Length: 497
Image (cartoon, rainbow, N blue to C red; front, top):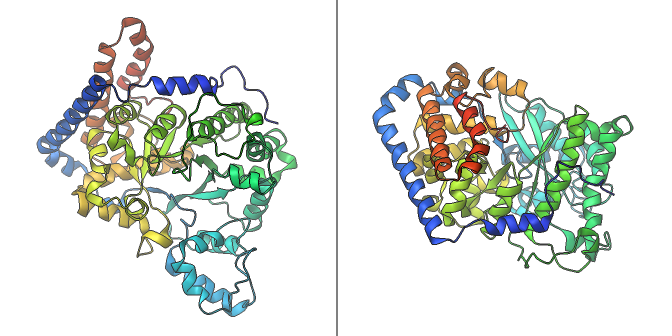
């Protein structure tokens, strides 16, 4: 069982729910205020570009030389279609009787399979499952060993919350030597409680949480007894949950604790996210005290679900994935701006899964207002036509939204800052002072980004926070003064990096 939370753990889920419902998302006055401030910020950015565009251009470098990280939102993020086809064809010649999935009788010798792998999205994703795909390990091993130099990626590691799954993942990772200094894993914990309950694998929601965190505690407290899992966790930077987001939510209160949640009903998004985030927080406290790596919470929110999912993510997440629904809530958009919560977006994936046309996507507006947004690729097998899916996303941003080279360089720099790579890697890519929020933290010889753009973003955010603080009672603004001083001194808030 998961240990009791220490004193610095979050409040109960009922209190957190009340905190979320208190947010004035539909108050007409607050909504109007937030919309007016966002509109003002967008106009201010346009004015800055008009007045300082020439200066920024003279200070910027070559966009193709700027470092970037692809925090791919798909499970098959390391494998483009051409490499997948080449791999299967080579394997078919040497081992034609090899099956591709533990629950499928399909073999490499079946000629139609090679085309089916690329055309059937649901089937192909199964081949990338570390615990079910028979060739997922060799495929990932080849993808990492043959990738071009300078490519940094974070890709999803799917987890179905089954008992013993962490042991299998650790063995899979070690057997195929998948540790790489230029690659990190994001554990994608699916919302599959009902499926596990119907299969008889769990009796209540607490069993699901134990399947997710029990082995993590074992590897944290006794790492020498779990060397494979401990090595894997050194390369895990975050947990991604919330998918599938379109599961209908029931009302939150009153909600029983996980050990009493035994009904055949999927828990609400906020409830599920709270218990994942809380357990992760407690685990991080212990791992940090032992000098171990810690994990961020990066839920999927604002893609296909209710806008209130973004409220839960705002309260519990370090970053979020997608976030398109922010366009329906000026208040949440403004809050995400003030806290600078990272938002990782894949517009091409949104066009496929959400039928959201490029001209309807809120990314350019979010970027102009100053939200901490960056681009990433979706699943390369489903959304792209080349072997460089991230560059397709950047090309779309340029041609569909008219973003300039300087804009794309700024977005690329953010992708490195928002990634889970260690400080040493970020220093190598961005410069030794990358953690400073001011222009002093921007080494333009490495980032290629104009100092004028960084100075504008830092100054605008500091003034916006100061303006909000001026509207609050004095006893509340005292709490925020430290944040203002950190901005003025060029130091970022702790939750940003």
